[in-house]
Length: 333
Image (cartoon, rainbow, N blue to C red):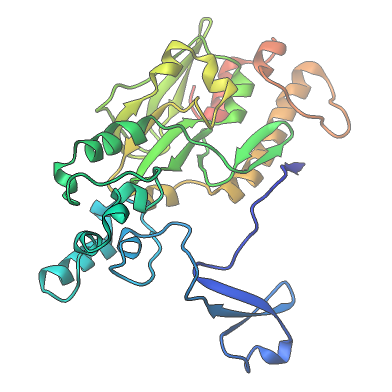
């Protein structure tokens, strides 16, 4: 059973477009792009006044008319940014920095403000970001320590599955962060099944993780559970708050309870190796079925509808075997 929260954001069709209902015979007649969705004809037209949800730096500076960022504001690996810089070097394109220098003084704001990552902040370095102390601080420290915040969460029999997160079948999650980093943590299912850990054995900053190999562990009493890494990459930040207070992971598994931040050379490829949020809901449904069978073996038949699970399944059912749980759900042990 999947339960949805309230206040789900209105779904849209693409960026920079408007749409309205049409008749089936109008799909090929009206100006715009004809489409049929759910048995309803829609006429979609480009909207010159539309605003991108993730505006590219080049658009916000006025150097180009419309461009939405599709690289998580990681300009260093962005093909579009590289191509534009090549045009600038040939004199065929104004740079976003020069476009900003032409703006009135009060509109010359930081590139991170332009892309809506921080509130308005005046640029004090004439858009020479490589000379800016704040730019370095923001990229290396501030953004790294900022927690994830799911905007919409599905609930499957008591287990939360947030949108816009990617899942590994060993019950870890990865979220693509602004700047092209991956924030990593344990999912709500594993933390409720195994209960609150006494401590986490987390790798140090600079440690390299390898996808699907054991990357860290959690301890509870005299038990240790190894956890597989969901992605390849180098750890650039460790959540020391969780190391000092392991219960934080259980209280906010997708927020302040994150474990570490990873830099990977190809963030999109890393995400493709994981499950999307939609696939994650179906997967958790299957995992709940396995858990129900394990609980039935030690506690007898469950209610007809299965009910919902609360925190610390292992602690509340002493008959459950720790090793079998780690083998079934963490794919280790």
